[in-house]
Length: 351
Image (cartoon, rainbow, N blue to C red; front, top):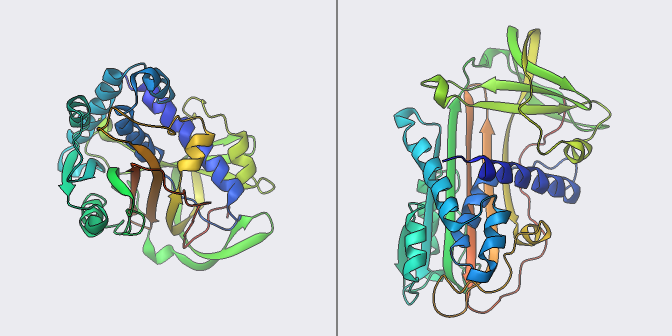
């Protein structure tokens, strides 16, 4: 199945959200998002849309129909499953509901195409611990508290996607070369002390573009077909992260990386943890998530909240990352939490 539509939508969604978060957050804050997790949760919601709104919802996700959407994510699941024990990325989906919720047969079939784990509880609010345990199990333990009893108070259905990543650098950094308290610029005139990893006399895939330099650091893979890399963008000294994101070409083709030998190459060691309420942002970006979702189950079904949590830890050995997105449904609309909450332990900028 060709996934260009889904891949394009996910890419654009990520850049658009990052641009808005850069504007809303302080310059020294770290931002961490996983657009694939958000797009997958939205795809699970698509099957609950009324028939008249379905074409708009599917097109916003980059496809023309529910069947095309199901096929695309089945293809993605097949690719991930075929990576074997050495796979770097894992994905899991779940639909948790109150025991009195009866999903419509067509929606149940649609969820099955996403390999959804379905589970009912007498009360979702009372099952917050069980739901968080499922999330932790499917994010390598990096995300343990996605939802709370309070946020589940009016919720009768929770659609959740969980992603996890673990990759080792093809060329690891030598821990003995890591320098502590190295100046790292998180804004044009503001620096932060970080642990900077270094390597010497090494070829690094890089490309120079107006406003930034990009590098590509590959992860060890079992075969070329399963290879993955980290791509990092370094803004020019007079360019802020916000300016860089605003000027990026969202639909640009893959960058033409070329190997360059560095006498000394440095990269910051960092960790980020973001906890976001993204429903208002999705509405701003034109996703039709307001209104009723009658094809999910009898009774009122509205999106109350969309919570997104993302974590990344990068060190000399490689990268661990995880993300989880929860779309929370209510029968009667509850107030949406205002703004966005960002929690990070490291800044992102230029060094």
